[in-house]
Length: 354
Image (cartoon, rainbow, N blue to C red):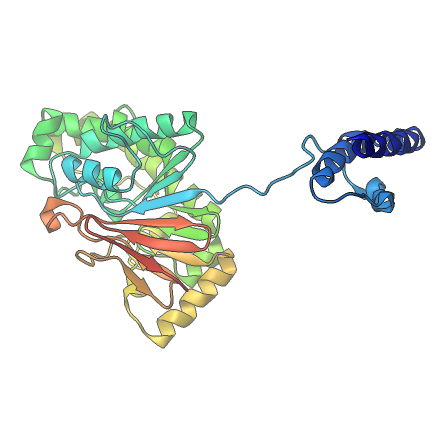
């Protein structure tokens, strides 16, 4: 005990002398005493010459800086108007609790588009995600909703896949059009909260896929074009004539050439090439990932039924497994934590290790 007190006294005296000499370095004293207490338990002596490089240490609020753990990212595919299945898959991924409240903490949820069509509950699901976005933000997490091709089909009043039950949930056809307009809830939600594509850490998320042409254009441009299109479409749907007839009338110079290209078959909403396991497809994918500086791409759109598909050694994941009852009600989610990727199913979990 006496030796320990003598040890502390001697070294305290020396550090105070050092402090007078280097008093502009405010981090020396707290750093030294932390080191002193730590090493008392590890050795009987401390070499003070280790303090010679103290001047290189940048002032820090914490003497023990720790690197942040990677955030948990959950991705789910097309939901197509099925509220019950939506709740089930969110529960499966531990994103919501039994009261359908956000329970994902600081995690990130990405839904890759096509909430609408084929089922009766699109309005209910959009309202759910609008609420989850707010709850996640409070908890330090995030919910990212992407546009799918069916979101834009509904903005164009292409109702080929709209069910009578879905129309009934709005009260009437006219009310449904109003909800998708800039005056309605869905139109406002589209304008404020949905994106064409998103990069989260080192993963690109998009509905259909991004080819090399659009990779070179960049994520920011795609999102700008998408936002511009949504603004134009939702404002057009405020037209009383369109609301009465249910027919979309495109006005002169409605879209720019770039906006039209975004909606084409090789654009991010309709692209399906990454399901094909060919050398040519992989070569283009490699270039896309290199241009966008990401490790992998996650897409929906192409229904794989039951199981998530991983192609090209984990460089692309296709997560549209047919969650909606229209496709059989298959539940699955993709989880990414750092470099660890896994599929989550009700019966088991499959890990990828690339």
